[in-house]
Length: 428
Image (cartoon, rainbow, N blue to C red; front, side, top):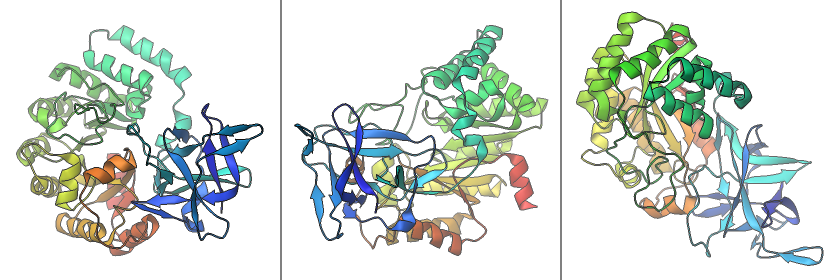
């Protein structure tokens, strides 16, 4: 087993000489299996977990120990637990093992992954679910980007939407925002400052102040002309171009369905190139129908669970329920859209038998094309406090993925939205 890792107050990371790596699945501390450990993917980031003491296994694997203090030379150090935030395309199999008895505040909104140290390298409890090279961090060089952003803003200084995505590209390092200026692949187009859900892990608005939002939300509604200017340019010029409504810096795009429908119609009058996609909570079936008729081609509906009580405890929907979400998925399929769900995955919840059964029922009922497996960005303790008590056996993330593939061999399993050319090639 890899060794337990911990950090001092300055963030320096060490491996423990005796204790071995532990992981967490829901409320349970577990010993990772070799199958769920991989070398830490390039581009991953490290996080220390303040107020949380690391937990490790004895060499025998029979007892757990909370690491309260560590002797470092002549000093006694209070250790902090350490986690990784994985590169795109990877899903975690275990959460970091840490004691949370002394916490005073919740962690920022990241997906925390268990890591250890062995053979001079870090290992993570993770598996790869998508190897799409367009999301490789090596393809997003900020030194090149800055000049492209400046040039684009100079040529079009009055488009507020362009300034918004420039802000997201440079400050938040959003890949879909960066692609606007690289003029390639998937480009995000935010449109809605409002939302009809109060997600516990919303990254752009936290009115309850449980945690700090990691993004500033869009504070205006763009005009049709601003959307068309951005979207049309991208689809005409971009390699494997996608424009996607529904980004991390906004609320729910279906709240602006009429505006988006007008923009889509205008864009399709000018070009048939590329893919028009939407990321949504699927809360408004009727407005979604208008968008399908306007020319929307692909949709991804986000959910943390296909079990309504678990879904609603996290999304905290306003004037809609899980029933409307299912109806929206069916409408999109009826119109011939490529339909994905964005499954916000959490070890110890997503991989419980009752959750797997609910998801399989949803897939059969709606005839989904794809399940996008994404890590849920949230403090594990906050999430487990908010959702109902868990039932059923935990089968593990790897077994969940294996069962999903076996049960639905034609289902696409990945992490990223696909361009129309790739979708059509697969169908053919």
